[in-house]
Length: 406
Image (tube, rainbow, N blue to C red):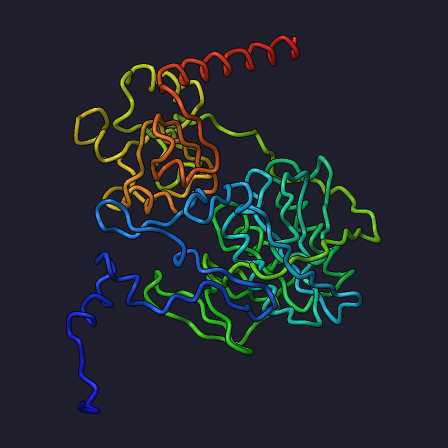
């Protein structure tokens, strides 16, 4: 026989074509490996089955894994604990904490702080008022300072700057990091910089050694400058912390803050029509699809919840919703904190459009649809009955709140 190694063009074509039924057989699948921090990583794409149409499907139910149930597959991996008993320095972070929880922008900021802290420094998060977050440990926070008090309620930039000045005097951090956002971090960071008489680096998206790179020229150019002490970072400035958990030890100020005489009076939030909020800026979206049969009831539910209405492409094509209400890759990419999908099966374009949403709630008759697999909370049943029950629950809650206030 000849010793010449001959190519198989068909096999090479199958190895490049991910939709071919034999594609998986041509790939050397690595099911698990050891990560850099000693955590065993699993390749979820290596566990699956070939569907009836010859497409590789990922097994999320556990049925294809020797009868292992979904509860067994959902066991949380214990991440290694990162401890800093005696920090050599501090990297202070002031997250926006919109709604009392860490946003994706805040987590990117903490990831950047973790990079700057290294193994000797500690990340100190400064939070104003009460919060609802319980995942500081996995977000990269070593020390937590909560500045609580009525003087920090609402819009109080002067009092918050005074609190940050007190933190700066006590801990003398190597760097201050704030999100350059419209949720308060951008304004607070610039006010704080003016109070310290320091020039901050704004719209920073990358840090290399002793140099930072920020957006300039209406986002069309990059500006490189030496790394200052005060940094206002943009979205996706770093990868969030995912491989370690941290102590989140509470710390307190050694001095008592004096209440400053405010020159700005907060008159409270202004009521806004949810329908007037652009889809890309809405925080609560109530979206309907082909499974919605009673659209009048759908509109009533959205009004009762005070949510911005959205729709799938099928509902828009059928004329039930306007084109500017379409959610998905072919419509609007949304970043809502809560996204409720009613009667939406979950096409790939729609799932791409809601990829940045924090919490997804699905209401559907099909327990095996892709939207149910994507959702954080699923309700299986007829949408009309569920929506009516939701309206009744909201009205009962509001009536009870009125009686308590009276």
